[in-house]
Length: 392
Image (cartoon, rainbow, N blue to C red; front, side, top):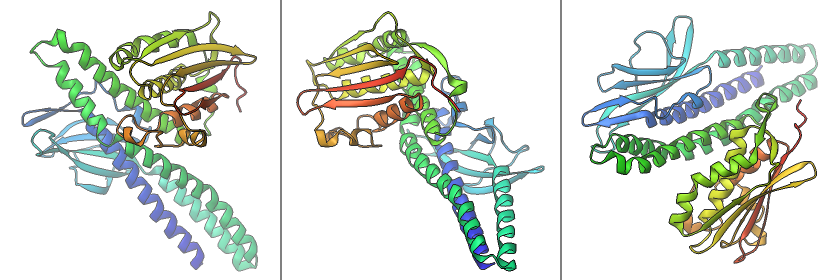
């Protein structure tokens, strides 16, 4: 009996802590849609949408400094429920929501101008607690009857998937918090201000559109983290025929200005039959991460070459650069989250690009490999199946 109560207490405490962390991440993400103008704030849902961040049980609400609702997105509590800073439980009809609210700080004045609140319907929590209580009751009954060893085995079996879920969620929230801390708000605010600048909008428009595009890339990165957190999900619904050659040409145009500004020659070559199977957005993200990594670590005057080769059942995208290279003992570490070959460039990039590229490639039935040596450049090869991968 005491063991069952201890397990339930630990489960509730851990679940509540994870929920609070998840709500904090969503609330920070909600800040990126804020538009600051003098003493007033507004929400811009057209430029950057939070839809990719929300599950069907989650929602976001924005309030001004008087507690008036400015807008909402996703599943939220019905009626005018004023926000309170921190974690709260809000009841609406027959639904109960876990919420977390944080202040909206004007980056120019430092004043508190409102509140953003993330919400999550805790029906899943109720179901899990019900399942846990049911399991504990059965285990306790069996223990009372005389099957102590059987009850212990049942408890371990019940806790194992819960512990695995907690570990996965902990890793995800750590990565998401790192990525969403500041850059989303800064990029979105600069893009919105630039696109509305009347001084010379035609001259500056391309620059601000690039900033907005960077924010959209960050939003796609958040989707990638959500995908990493649910790595056991089937790829069957995401299978499409992908023209990798067209993807490379699109990326060549996207990074043309960046490579020119960096003084690096970017050359892209692809064969006529460059077809793979998978999710086109994820394949584009994989190759984009490899190109960004090559440009970042290639000094001025160097070159980056991207080509496609077909090898038996796989289509391989090879990204070669004449950059600083990677020591052999670090070849495996380059795919670790937040690890960088050059610590002096810690402020460049997120440190997640290569780890996400490899994880997404493996989800497609392929992989990302590296061949490099110090001072001689690097070669990253992403492989994709040319036939639909077997799905369960």
